[in-house]
Image (tube, rainbow, N blue to C red):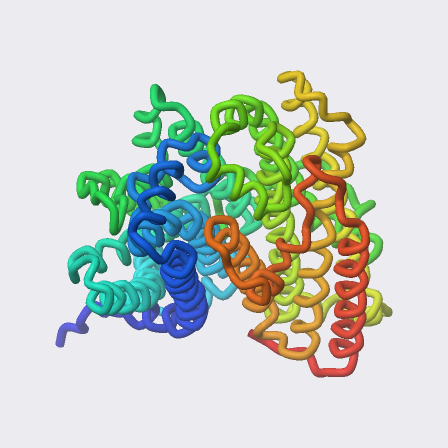
Length: 541
């Protein structure tokens, strides 16, 4: 009697398991993107109720280099749907892509780091089928996002009568295109890098390069062709609900197929736990950072912090370099003046543009805090903290040490970003002082401290919700702030955004009183989280 080969039939079971573990995250992000779309439509309709208002808005809005660099190039903005579709093109794709690359590295490389992949492969399942099952499960998670956005867009089109079912589905496809590409990128780099932190850092570098190429392509008419070299540029080229370019789906599909194929080949060829890049186990032992929990936290956080510092420094430098060009091109535009005023600046000058771009970087620094919350929770969920707490180390000492190390890293990264921004601005003779840019860099930190504190409180009270709470707080703040920049959103809604309480330094002086309040709330929340963590049982995954 021949025993059937069940190896290839087991990966769908794995896919279902991965889907069940991560479907809630997909539903959460789908809901956030849905709310952003609905708020954009309703906000535009209330701010520009007549067709004349909309035509005037679109006339002053299109071909605006400053707005294009920040939010992507708009082809149309004379209807609620076209406005909402354009608003989602870059911002939602950007937020979704960051979430996707972190999700992929967690589902693949983190599983190997923690030894769970070996348990899965103990069954009759090949290494390639293991990767195939994980990717199929993640595809299902993205399918949740697509379904939520498809229903939202189709219903809006049918109710408003602005576009048909096909256009609504194309919009939903555009929303999931960016995350799909960066799930593939995260999966590939999970085969290349020996740790999840390094894989996520490398994927972040790819994302940052894609974003910068997209930004340069949108600023200059002569460089529009560069958009075809950027994954985020391909998603932008889809132009849902405005002037759809169906050619853009071709490079997206080719990219995903090629990267997934390379991922499967590498997964099949390498050993479990192995990677193309060396983890430097052969190097000299340096035990200095292993002698206390805080020093261990420094060692664990160092690679990611260096990656974030490099990426944000490049972003700060680029924003400083282009701020004068962009502000000069848009200084006479009334719509730009209105948008800058809503961000808190009085006039369209280079320092104002630099201050607004630094608000984006404040959200990025807050992402560092959210990632630290997730890492701390992972230490507990995977049982690694048990080995530390079994020694004469209290829970309070362990968690407090991690919080202090994370905060120190965020302060250093903020200052490095400010210095890089000053270097770019100084090369353009903007007249922005070194001290003001240092203050602008430090101004990025309070919101991150608040996110770190709230995430730590969630970790102490509801440990499995810690990471989603931290990331959702950033996503909500970012999306609300972007809505408020372009439409007259209610003040009550804007106040729910943490970014709304951050001054656009160096255009204006930082609001140190608001910063102090955010830091104080963050510290109190973190203290509550430490107390709650000390009193509860350790919780697994």
